[in-house]
Length: 120
Image 1: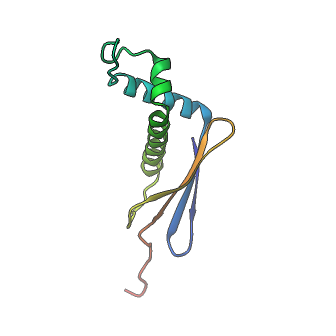
Image 2: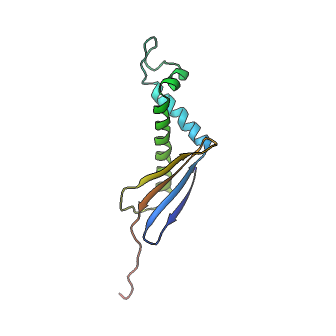
């Protein structure tokens, strides 16, 4: 995962995130396992439905879960590595899948302005 931070002069901050195909694949495998353990289907015990059948039946749910997991992982990484003093709720925008199997998105938020008081 790679990211770049752009802070404008009015303290609007945009973090552009690029998630590699390997990271998306790892999250995809985790999402399939997470969903598979809760699937109940006639003819199979709970959690024992074959992976291919889970992918076929719950493909959209898996894709949604992968996007959520990638955004959450990026979110945690960005905010752990940087000391942001956020003053509003961050929002996710421009969520796109790349041709190579990765994804890109932006996290937008405002930060507390830094200033110094001179003359005291």
